[in-house]
Length: 146
Image (tube, rainbow, N blue to C red; front, side, top):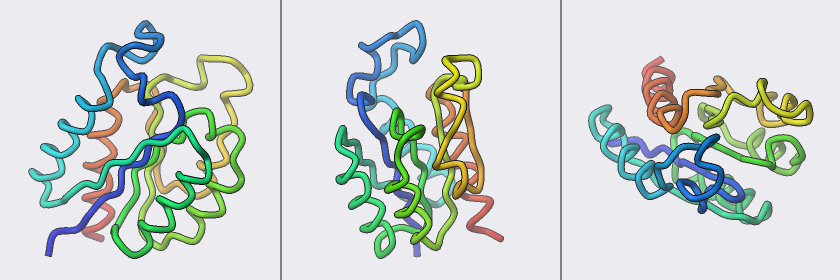
């Protein structure tokens, strides 16, 4: 049976490719979704892609993943630095979690250096551009084999 990976995206990622391309690149979230789907298929995985600008909707998506997914790849965006609610939801998820950031958050403003999500993540990928999502899928595939 193919295992599903929930790929969850936080606020403003719907503007990917148009918002600060000098930081986040020119690819759109649709481009990322297509590449993730192709990568996952090559790894024997399926993806379920979700984006919201609303914290509670992201929490609900994590709750759904408890029943529908073997693993989570999450780019919580700005909620990385503020959301205990997302951390608590991830703590209730039993599978592997990989946190992704398109930019290198450690080279940016000081407030971006702290991540609540990292306390739960099995891996953190930052500064690899949108390639970070496919790197995360490769890591998830390895974690699911163990």
